[in-house]
Length: 190
Length: 190
Image (cartoon, rainbow over all chains, first blue to last red; front, side, top):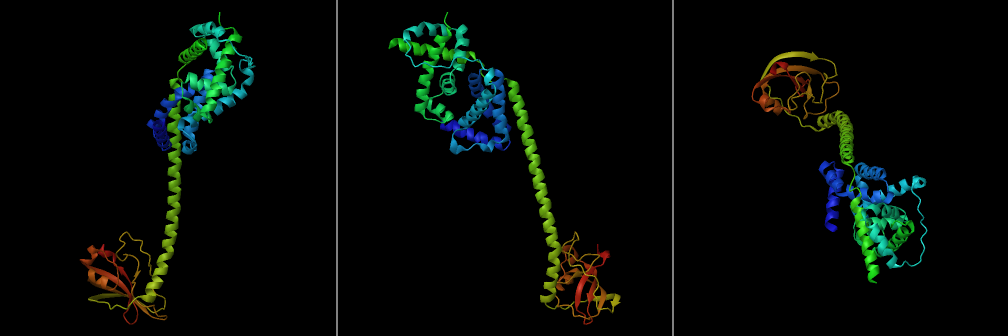
């Protein structure tokens, strides 16, 4: 992670001097992860496109805003995307599909889940899973998106979300429990 | 326990499927638009930079020229006060152009604005840097002399190598005792 991070910093420095290939390289490296992050956080591809674009516009306009002492370039970019997504979602709160966020702490019988998840893993049930992910509270949704969908390590996700790896692990554990409960509650399985 | 593990694995697999089924990145037109924005931003930035450099250069040039306008006058005073007396090696006096009976010396411009910076100006008198203060009430005459260019150097005039190698005709402002105070080259030398 240290090597790409240093490489990213070089790209950002070159970008600040007006080097277009450096910008293209940085864009190609991060547009996908950023786009998917926003897409899974917001559930809206238009929002994902808009925010991905906005993140890079901010980088173009003020590349020197990045402070290497505060973390990696990836963390900086995801941090911008995260804040913009949060703001966007607050603005559109009333338009988001409302799914019951109430999370009971009751234990789930794993045996009941098996069939359910077997169904969910089918392509036709992915929409159900997507809705369940979207219905997770934001802090849990973030860890699911980063660690499960983007397959980041705990330290990487911790760097982006500015918390400890232990917090990521516990949030992820709880998020998975909530997901199972939601899937069961939505009755996605036929 | 085994069932729980299977449940976890299936949830993980379902999430991987969801990630794979989602759009993988922003549309290419966003990348093109951002590249265009990057180019425009840096074009504008460079223009602003050049404009700033031009403004600073103009300010600097204005300051420098105003300084230079003041400095020769000061130099002249110092030279006139401190300069040693040098005899004029007159070789051939050809013509006495004018005799001034007033106490006001002919206009002497100490500032060298000619393109030939090291030669006495063709149209204006240049103060010789190495003579005593002009005594008040002294009478001045303008004497035209033909002499080797090299001899001009002996009286303290700055001459180019080209002029030093040939004979030149010069007008000297001299006091009643023959002390030369200023010189100008007769335009036929050029």
